View 1: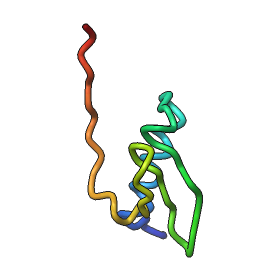
View 2: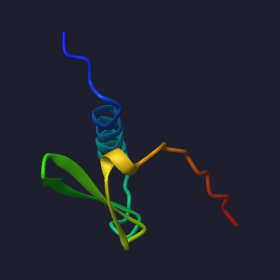
View 3: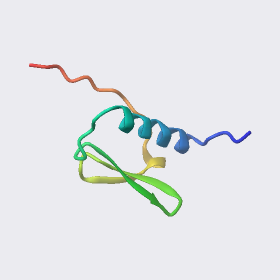
Length: 64
């Protein structure tokens, strides 16, 4: 049995979040695979490999 790495688990979690929610591309966007690693654009300005993402926290914005 192949056990997924932490990076693979984070990538799967991010993909599920993108599928199940509507994120503006200015907040989170999948950029594809480069050199065997999945890359994301965060906050419209930071290109990061999934291995550099330490954790995912839900932020609930209060409505005015």
